[in-house]
Image 1 (tube, one colour):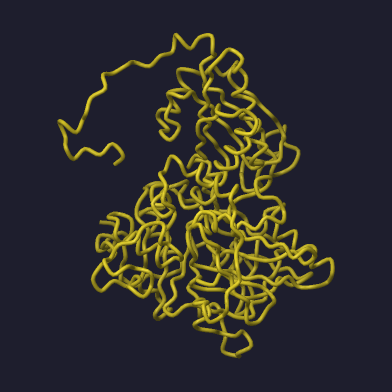
Image 2: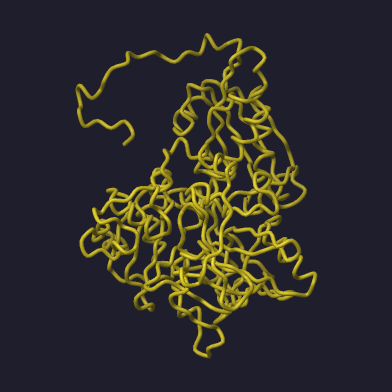
Length: 527
């Protein structure tokens, strides 16, 4: 047996008796049950998973946060674009972190579409519709008194000479060549210095020193727009980084324009999902707000006109593994966050994510689906049946559209829907369109449609040299002469639908409908 894997077999399901997870006073009911409507924070979400077999495991075997922790979860449940072998599996809590007495780390909370649906009270197939509805019925966050903010139960001020965030929080590295430890699941929250409008999003944050972090912004991100406004005025931008929150917040934070334009606070999407406002609390050291029931809140400021090399402490030339499945190059000059304080709950749970994993697909892909559904439905109601932001594209690069043609006039509208999808989510690279009889969540079925309902010379639409995403390693002039600037791509529509006038020739074989449970009473078609 591979010695690196031997202790995986000592994993156990999360425990009901003597569990390290929430007890009655932390949102679990006296009869031991909880459902999605009762989830208000990370601990109640974990309590929900604890009572659903196969959704959560824990281990007491000490783990090194530097590469080993992510190396373990790569096998247990990362899935996504992670190097094989991997699989869809349970979320995992490491109860003992080397060098961090009393700390715990959670990974993989959202690394299963089924688990996300469970925590949001939906089904895997309807998540895009659920998110779309939440955008339409947003509930703004509210501010609560500090007495109600469990995130401030314990306070560490950076002004204390003994303060060192490197020793305080077990930020992992994903691989041995990472630029440094990263906070990968921090909800970065800040406000426009001119309008006061707020935004929450997730960014790549590398630990650089005892009280300094670097932050990477993909061009166009709203908090970067806030930062640039503050920097133009010669002022720092106050921010918070909330770690370990209600998964509804983590999903809602990943919406992008045009669905959520500048000034739209994505915390209001989480409010709609939970049918109650997200609670914020005023910070202790900066004029900003953190998520009141977060496990950990980092308070700080993005300094004006200060930059740092991302890998200054390691000189690896690498950053960390990103969602396409490749490790990105480190950046030469990134903005700096000056940490002012760290506050947290008692016995906090650090949450992290492997960049190229199914967890990223859930966070980025489900909001992508909602955005496409919204835009296409407005243009052609009832034609787009569903959308799947496919795992292989990290939730960003590839979308499967299930489209229904009902009349000859619908021919061509499926391609119009694809064009609208590109408009709804600018980082989308490829769209595959299938008919209503194809299961868009079954890759084998999608490839069957591409094999039997697609001819490359007439079924492909190329849109060259359009802005896409800078982390696509093929999006360079060296790869294609059609690309004039890194980050541009040739966007492609793969029309795998049957031409309407030929639909009668493409009926799938019809099988008799039967009740399988007569023969196999325990049969579960969803398993």
